[in-house]
Length: 130
Image (cartoon, rainbow, N blue to C red; front, side):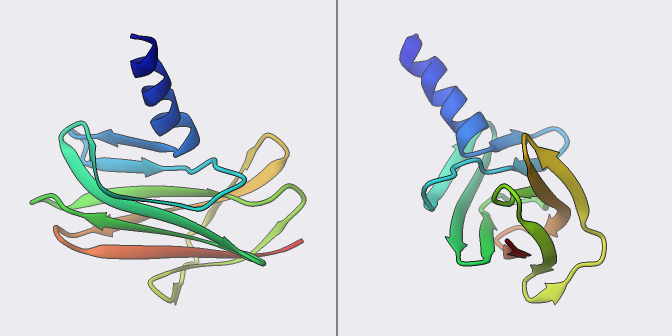
């Protein structure tokens, strides 16, 4: 049972993934400060998604593909490096004006909701100054 506890904690707290099948909402708040990751066709409860996170110099990018037969809302929250200031959030290249700003320990976060059709993919990109 201990392995199951670790796996559940890793998916929800480190990869930052949780899915509410009834509400059709995928929450994606990746906390993996040292590495990028990609997970193809991840089964989360009743949902199946491909997700990835990549960090560059001054930006963070997360991508989601909806492999379900229904639309979902992706609630993305990207954690900036400590001391960084958000400059812009884009979704599929379009600047978003409805960006929420929060905190995670000493770091700022940028949040937005994205409606994702069945079979569709989306990419959110945050740029920041350090």
